[in-house]
Amino acid sequence: MNRVLHVAALLVVLAVTAARGQECTHPYTAIGGYCIYIDPFETGTFDEIRALCKSHSGDIIWFEAGLDCDLFRDIIEHIHANSLNEHDYWMGITDNGHEGDWRFVKTNQIVRLGAPFWWVNTPTEATNKNCAIMQKSVGYYFVDVACNAATYSAICRKN
View 1 (cartoon, rainbow, N blue to C red):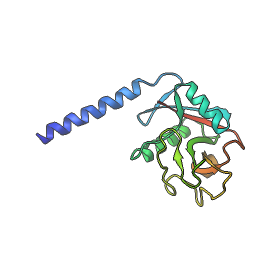
View 2 (cartoon, rainbow, N blue to C red):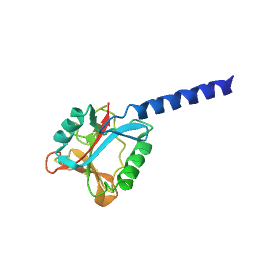
View 3 (cartoon, rainbow, N blue to C red):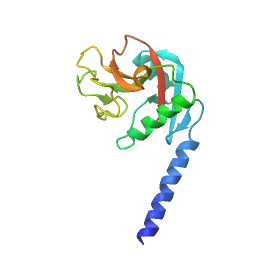
């Protein structure tokens, strides 16, 4: 009986994963079982990139608890494999309004600090750095930056 349940559960997981891949329409690509849109050429502030993602029926990239390391790795591999690795990318992470408490803007889920995501000694305690990017110069680890001080590229995830 347990074997039958395990096989049934596996088939459900495979069906859901296949469905995710089939739902990806232009400009999204299946990455790590999710529909992801990486646009290195469209740059803007945090709010501008979030608006861009929403205009494509998505939101600025966020992770799910328990799957974050896999999706993070898959995105970085995709960036390198497709020569998109000359840019810094916005993450959908902020501590704006809750200083020091970093959360995904899409889900309000708390973001793990430290390894494996954040660069050494980041995020800082600077109160003017309330958003995060994946920074190319430090191997795409997260670093905190001002939300409107510079323009970075887009990674969107379909809702």
